[in-house]
Image (cartoon, rainbow, N blue to C red; front, side, top):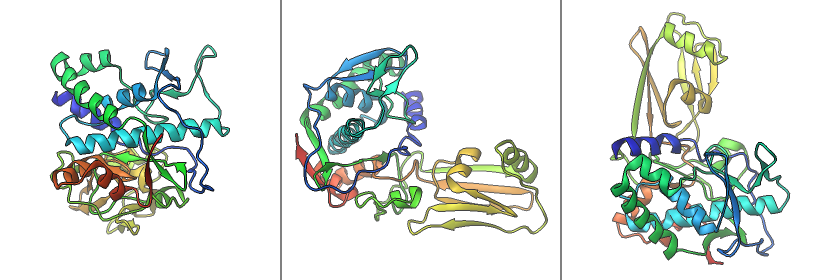
Amino acid sequence: MKNYLLYFFVVLMWMALVPFAPVIIGDGAKAETYENSHIIRVLTIDNTVVEMTLDDYVLGVMLSEMPASYEKQALLAQAVVIRSYTQYLLEAQEQGDEHHTASGGLEYDLCSNPSCCRKYTTESELVSLAGKTNAEARIKAMSAAVSETSGEVLTYNGKTAMTLYHASSPARTESYESLFGTAVPYLVGIDNVDESSFIHYKKETYFTFLDLQVLLAANGYEYKHVENEVFSVTLNENLRANNIVIGSTDIPATDFIKIIGLKSCCIEITTDGAGYLFKSSGYGSGLGMSQYGASLLAMQGYSYKDILKFYFKDTSLEKR
């Protein structure tokens, strides 16, 4: 089970960074909805297109992207968030985005690549990853969350919201505008609960000056250590790094953490005179709902509706 949870967190890290332009302004008219009678086509990891209902798909994503050990109200919130984001993508396609095209000319609505859509896991895949007993317990918990929230989505100005999520955040979540330059009123930085108890909250990595030089060069950045060089982290209003400066080398923080293996843009840098120690806090992009934070809020008595309001300001929960 420990190996499966580690797999879950690795897959989760940057899933919230998506190349879709946000739909944030509407006249109150609802876009086409995707009820469970509407069949969607999903490309699975074995390159097979499978037809299913929206809730079938939501369940498959739930199975791969949140621990079943989290509080029930957090699982309910996660189900709504996944359903809303899925419907957001489907509506974007209806408004002109091209459908995916697989090899051989197959057409489908969603894929199983977390860097594009979301990681979708079948029940048989889960059994092979987590074992039959763990898989059955997980399927039971996730199915209940999907069923109890069936049809519920978050909206903003009458349109389905782009409900992003991540594993864990430090003191503040991130804003969409800070990362992508476009303001999304419900994806803004907020003061978060204390998540320092999260098992993967801290990550550290150390590089000698020479090792760092070789690593950066391999990733297209020129760096050569000089004595007494200046290093700094440029923070935004949500206390996340925009840029990392080491000597004369300036690197966007989102690139830097991927190169050196950190888990978020909440970065600290220190040196011992022979190299640099890099530390990060939290896990993931920081956009939208923190999954661990949602579970902590549920422990404090928040309902799933309260959790959604906490992370997605000024949105409405609708039954469609």
